[in-house]
Length: 352
Ligand code: ASP
Image 1 (cartoon, rainbow, N blue to C red):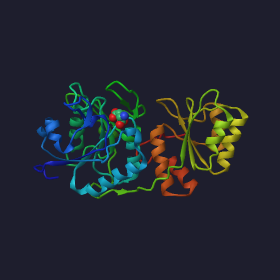
Image 2 (image 1 turned 30 degrees about the vertical axis):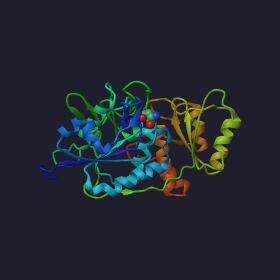
Image 3 (image 1 turned 90 degrees about the vertical axis):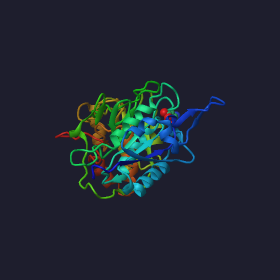
Image 4 (image 1 turned 180 degrees about the vertical axis):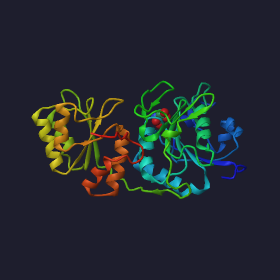
């Protein structure tokens, strides 16, 4: 990249708390006009950056996010790809980790940063965390390495001084500024006095110059079943055997354990016999599934349940929507679930 050329960023405002400011007339919070971003956040003007913005219409509280919005985001990034060096997606925090995960799977060959951020307090209130989040996200999205390549060519989430891989992040706090965590992968960067990048963790593309391909076909026939003591066979049967689903994310205990009751294992076997994909994801915030440790986990493995390793539920949902959308072949999807596609699982030398 020409060192004298200004980096250019596109900010895509989808909705959420960050873009709100108080209306001086009636004191309610209203979305501000993002074409005036430099007036609202003048600090952005201190970087040598060309910043454009577009806003969704209507703006979306992220509880209303659906795969249609992910397709729209992927389409915008794809269409504008050659015009910008990086993309910032301003998004409500509630489902940000789902959106970042899904997008990471939908784009192949990404070689520029796509940084999601948002805030716990609106950008227009005095103690907002939104300004710091946006300013640092802009610095990260425009950062280049010694060769002039983007420093973080990944889909990520920046929040409260942490840059996390998008498909590793989870929302962990509803009222503190540290709203996100990446329990199974250290941050890709930490912003303090300097922004310290964890370069060895950051994924690099095979090709620095191509435009990524975007796959917007998603198959949402996926359910999530969270196990709990007292869960009934009726409920388990409904979810596992539902004719409307091709896959179930089984949120199990600890290292991937589930009840040893015969009725439970019979239902699991029946679902597998019906060609459903059952993916074992732990309910624990950190750590991984290892179905070889306890007899209860081993029975799931023998019944044909797939190991989700250390994937998050948010990551598993995006990965499944994407893979099921790509193929009707359940065996192919199972084989891809075992593979690390976008840095979403930690592959150990001898994965179990
Ligand atoms: N409910 C809001 C949303 O996720 C909260 C936020 O913006 O953080 O859109």
